[in-house]
Amino acid sequence: MVDLYKTETITRSEVDSLDGITVLDFGTNWCGHCRSAEPHVERALADFPQVNHIKIEDGQGRPLGRSYRVKLWPTLVFVRLGQELARVVRPTSADAVRDAAAKATEQV
Image (tube, rainbow, N blue to C red; front, side, top):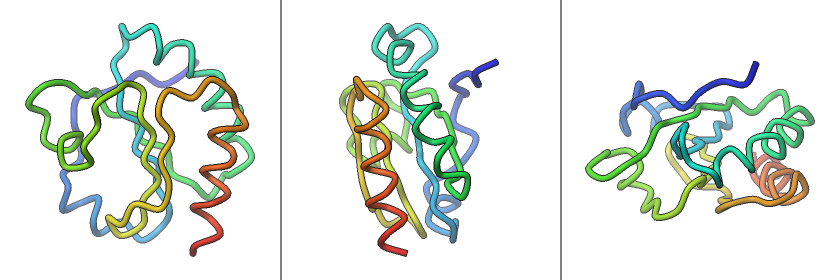
């Protein structure tokens, strides 16, 4: 079963302290774009087990998404110690996510 987007369970200061590569996956459970992207994201991230995947329900007034200037769902932000390494907005293929993950892991 695929994980659901959860209300923010992590703060920006906690993200800033995460040493490994993490992808913050901003979206909502009811978003059609998010549902369409889900299999592509899961397929691509299966090739990068070292990347921690956190699905965060986003919306107006949600501070974490705003701190990364998320405007469209889903937006995947690859970070390490709070520093953005790569970003994918509304991926329509596993390759787009795979490319961003590769770019992020190469920078470590």
